[in-house]
Length: 237
Image (cartoon, rainbow, N blue to C red; front, side, top):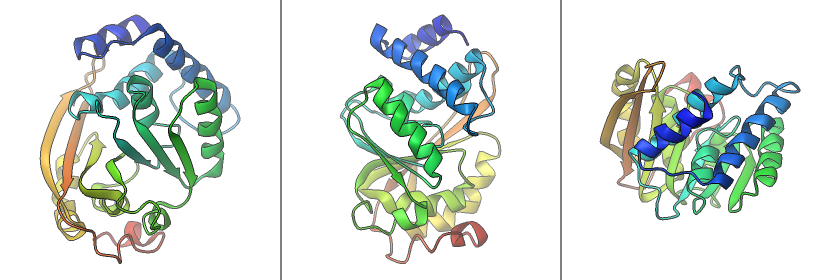
């Protein structure tokens, strides 16, 4: 996906990018490639693939979730900033918090946000399990999301505790999404979330399948969740 195709594909979905936003995406790509030579941020580094599999794929969440109100969004384990930084570029009014367990990635994201001139972004170096037990962050966000971090049964324990009651947990998934959803039903109920929407679509050009699950936070998460670091992964709910 070249930049012109990127512009047109988003325009078809009602997202019109300004020249400044296009320059931000171009700078994002340049910095991603530059920093990737020093640390492992992504295996995808050619421009057409970055624009399709990272930028467009991240923004695809906005085709199904309304980001027009300047909500607070928390991105768990965002790695090189996906999906929240592309969403922030498209919707500057969003208030973004990214939590990641690797400090090098936090350093990259901090530098990236400065170079792109982003405001109302916060980067926290922490394990998601500990982050979710902090009174400062727990049940504080309108939307909590993650992309390619863990199976849904594990991911829900890391994300749902951060969602405020009435807010949403949005999970971006590729293959085996339905199997993951079945496995995660008990966990989601225990944590206080219920599925309200489900979307399946394909990425343009390569036609790879994507699934998006939207869960509403219907009750407060029991205080014992998330459990200690590593436990959700070893023994999912």
